[in-house]
Image 1: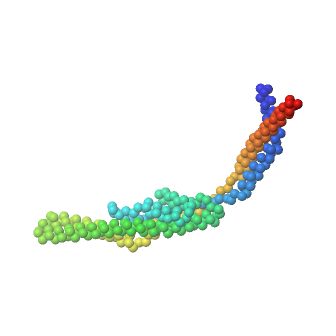
Image 2: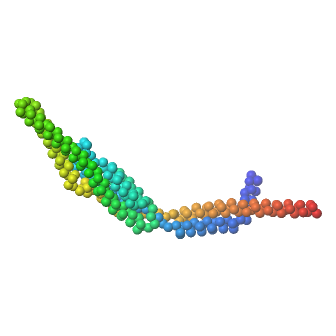
Image 3: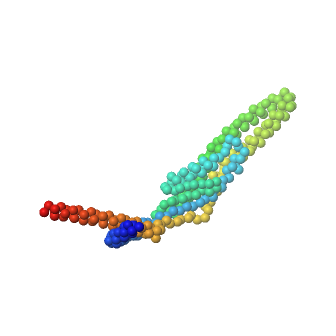
Length: 264
């Protein structure tokens, strides 16, 4: 216990001896932390959210081979936003699209980026949708031609059966023709809707609230406290190191003097 107290006192003596080294390192660390806070510019981030509503399904409902890939439409539009606005992060859920700009040097820069992204999204979404609707319309035209060909064949057969007097087959063919004619009429209505409507008629894109812009700055008190603690630790270590070097130097001098005295 006594040895421990003596060693502890020695440590405290060394720290008292090197107090100016410790205080100097502490002052330098606090000064550098304060300078960092002054010189480091604030960074800004912002985000905006949109609600998406689609009405394409109602326009092409009932067609097995003509469906619109809404995921493909949105993915294409959002990819266009990422290419047009560097650093813009995009994400979406079932009915939400979020645009986020994570870093900017000013509020105006973040606001301009979000405004640009919104403009590009409004431009790209109709373009992507028009391309997708074009594919659907092409499929519907093929279906229309197929139905018309089937009707032509069935009408010829109906005429032949009626000529031969085969009434049961004639009635069956007439029912089949009526079903196909109704299906063809529904298909032509959907095809006409797709060809005459504008892409904007199938989508609703509405911002939810105003864009949110936040500022990010380091915590001043925390930064200075951490800097001061590191400076204090470095100062204590440096004080012990300098004290150790001085002791080694003193022992070397005493040894050198002893050798000189012995040689005399």
